[in-house]
Amino acid sequence: MMKRNRGFRLGIALPLCWAAIAVAAEDGRQLAPLPAAAQAVLQAEMRDSLRALNGVLELLAADKVKEAGALAEKELGVSTMGRHRDKPFDARPGPHMPPAMHRIGIAGHEAASAFASAAAGSDRSKALAALPAVTANCVACHSAYRIR
Ligand code: HEC
Image (cartoon, rainbow, N blue to C red; front, top):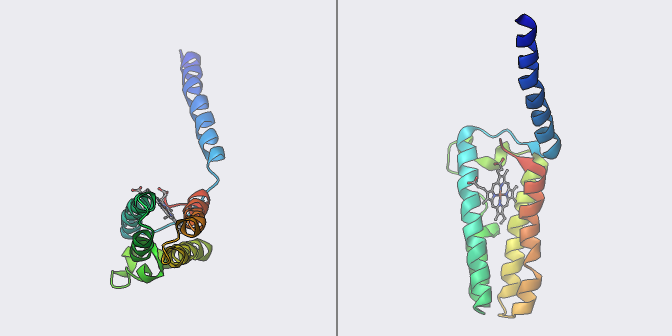
């Protein structure tokens, strides 16, 4: 009876261990430990960023190049930096990020502003050429960091 029980437990425990190891091996991202409030602020900001990016693409597709640049600056550009300054410290994502992660965030805002400058002259191919640098920072940060 005892023997059978132990075998049964191993039969459950071993596959569970293998599953856990497989998940850990797949995900090499570094954990950035943010306070819960800062996590929520970051996640909301991220959803806004995706919405803004989609808006930029829609405007570009409609040949509204200057408007695409203006939206990028307003929602993603350098002018948005510091927008959480007045929140409680625990709700500000930036200061809790590892410095290298924070730098990717800043580079993303700078790339969005560079896109806005490129789009200001209404030249769509010039604007398009500056767009992958914006998404490259989304990709770089998401490949390297997680918050949970
Ligand atoms: C400085 C790092 C960084 C940059 C830059 C960044 N993100 Fe994120 N993003 C994160 C992290 C960290 C998460 C949370 C991942 C997790 O759940 O562990 C996240 C989550 C998200 C989510 C899911 C939000 C949710 O509700 O769970 C979306 C959507 C997103 N990002 C879009 C974007 C877009 C679009 C860009 C570029 C315009 C971008 N992000 C740039 C770090 C970043």
